Length: 199
Length: 199
Image (cartoon, rainbow over all chains, first blue to last red):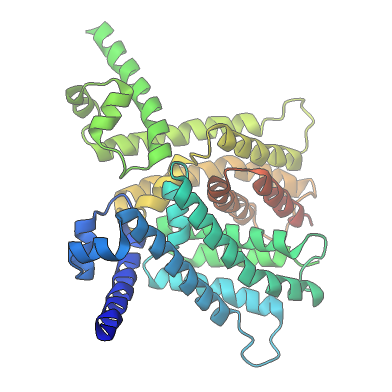
C-alpha cells in the first residue's frame, strides 16, 4: 500500500507538471481530458480518480503553478551576497521573470492566463487565481518596503500599492511579449517603471 | 441586388456586435459556430458565406473591436472645453476605460483577451492582435507627447515608451479587475502610475 501511495503521488506530480505546460500553451478550453491524459501518460480512469474533473485539474494546476512561481520569485529576489540593495533585487526579479517567459516561449503565467480566459464567467476560478496573485504580491511587498526604507522608492504611497503597480505592469508586459514574441520592449518598460518610482 | 447587399452588410455588423460580446465573455475556444449562430440569429450557411471560418470571424471581430475601442479612446481624451491639459485628458482616458470595463461586467478587452488566450500558439492571431494594440497606442501617444511639452510628464523617456507603460499597466489592471470584479484598486493603480511619471 505504501509503495502504491508513493507511485500515485509521483504520477500526480508528473501529470500536474506536464498539464501545466499544456494549459499555459493552449489555454483551458482548447484542451480536453483525452489530450491531457495523452500528454501526461495517465489513463482516463486514474485521471478522474486523482483529480475529480477537468476543472479540478485546472484548480490544482493553478495552485501548483502559484507555489512554484513564488519559489522562483524568492530565488530571484534573494540577497545573494548579503549586501545587495532591495531596489536592485526588484530589478533582478522582473528581469529574470521576463527571461523565464522568453525561455518558455511566451506561454505566460498560468494564474494570469486563467484569470483572463475564465475570470469573466467562472467565479471559482476567479477566486482561485485572485488568491494566487495575492500570495505572489505578498512575496514581493517586503522587498518594496525595504527599498522605501533605503530611500530608493517613494514613500508617498504604501508598499502594497507600489507592489500592485509593479506586478500588474508585468502582467500587461507579459501579454504584450506573447504577441511580439520578444521581451526587449518589456524589459525596457519594467526598467522605466522602476526608475519612475524613485523618490 | 442592392437591397440584398444592404441587408447582408446590416446582418454582418449585427453578428459582429453580438459575437464580440460573446467572445469577450467566454473566450474563443469555449464557443462553437453553432453557439455564435444561435446568439447572432445568423443561419450557419450564411455565417460561413459571410465570414469563411470561425477563426476568420474572430479576426474580423478583433479588428472591429479595435476600431470601436479607438473611437471610444478619441472620445475619452477629447479636449471638450478647449483648454483641458493633456495630463488631465490622460487621467480621464484611463478612468473612463476602467468604468467601461466595470459596465461590461469585466469581460475585458477582446484584443488583449485574444492575445492572452491564443498568442502562444497562433501566429496569425498574434499578428492581428499586436497590430490592433499598436494602433491603440498610436491614438494615445500624441496626448502623452503634449503632456511632456506641458511639463506634466517627464521628458527623460520618449512618449512612445511612456505610452506603452501606461497602456500595458492598464492591460494588467484590467485582468486583475476581472478577478476582483471590482475596479477601485485599478483606478488607484493608474492614478499612482500617472503621478509617478511627473518630471
